[in-house]
Figure 1 (cartoon, helix red, strand yellow):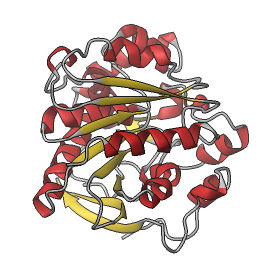
Figure 2 (tube, one colour):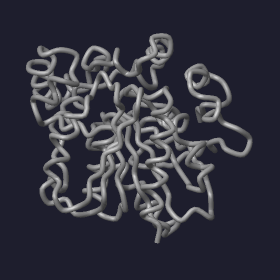
Figure 3 (tube, one colour):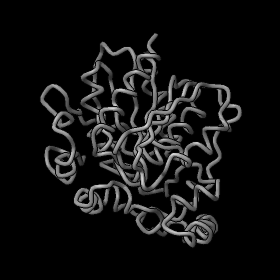
Length: 315
């Protein structure tokens, strides 16, 4: 089974983060695997039996679970919480079921299955955090699962909205022509398994605001340099949640918006979140931070906001 180990591209990215976030002997992820739907899902676990609330970390289409661990693992673990970061199929160190072509809907179903799996093992409440596309994935999982106690998102990207799709796609042609073509091709058995790089479909060049860190991230085939199938892209662009935002009444939501996010500015999330009326929605702006944040004070504000949010969920 492939693991991240102690070296690799993730280690080079970690060098761009403040020292206080670097892993230590007392605060580091324990690598684990979980079988689901034919996949061997890689997990970065940050165990703490005394924690009253647990947090599941969900990456987007340009990151992976280890990159979630690097920005939030240590500060939240030091604050007394238990975390686990998932590598969804196609990303990180997860071994994919080669007998099927996975979709974005499969990601949501895996997230739902994982929450149920964790609650069967341990009844302590679970909240979700998602970065980039992982923010909306966290919402989708919560809407399907209905047992999640809180949702935090770096952004909430509603791909069914053409204005949002224009913003997050590489260009208008990809948004207005490429994605509809992916929907058509995704329904065809042979064509649906064809892949394209996410940097061609999206504004991956705005993943982070440090050009040297971006060069390293773009070398990583398990995150920013990932290729996805037409079927996955079509599913992501057209996914219908189990509960539309107007009726969502499951749990509170927190948007942690990077102030200098060049990929998904604040309005991208607001056009979705303003439709939510039945639960509390709060917003925290992360100063000087980019989409995948490497910068203080935004990183510290992110951890502080999540710590406060999770304390509010404690039984």
